[in-house]
Figure 1 (tube, rainbow, N blue to C red):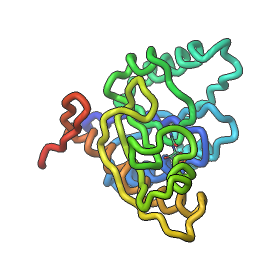
Figure 2 (tube, rainbow, N blue to C red):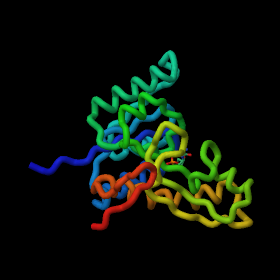
Figure 3 (cartoon, helix red, strand yellow):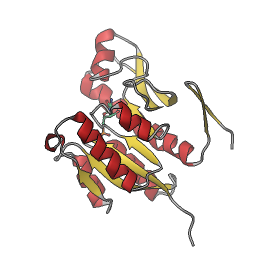
Length: 206
Ligand code: GAR
């Protein structure tokens, strides 16, 4: 009998390049987990097509078919619990998850955000960085807690800003780094190598 694989759920809303990075690292045997399900709140999300191309189960949960946010979150919780998921990866999932969701999977939800948190949380972080005039931005993988873009930080990568940058060029360069650190952060969790004390995450040596 083979050993039990670490099961991921990936929640998406858009193009799914981070999902693709996770899939690629799995297919190369670098990330030793499997994606049990990809869930989108957006029907046309290209991420769903990416998952289908790799034979991964996909679900579209339509927010409009639930009376309110609480009911949508409940449906999401039920779906994920039915899959016995080990870790939930938010990968461009553009919805804020409520307290019942966070509590149902405490310490088992991570997110990637395209800025060096705590700078520029929320929407359009690349534009915020450009408008502020910072010389460096980047991306952050963090555990998800009740507040938006605020949980303990697992990994970050720094990206310089150039005078010639616009939102598109900066986003593209940050995405390249996202695709490196997101699979790496997931693998650290798969290997159970992270210690979290209050909000500080440290890595155990191998
Ligand atoms: C990524 O840049 C991700 O960091 C960002 O959305 C993009 C999704 O791209 N997420 C957030 O801003 C969450 N606050 P992808 O669909 O190609 O992975």
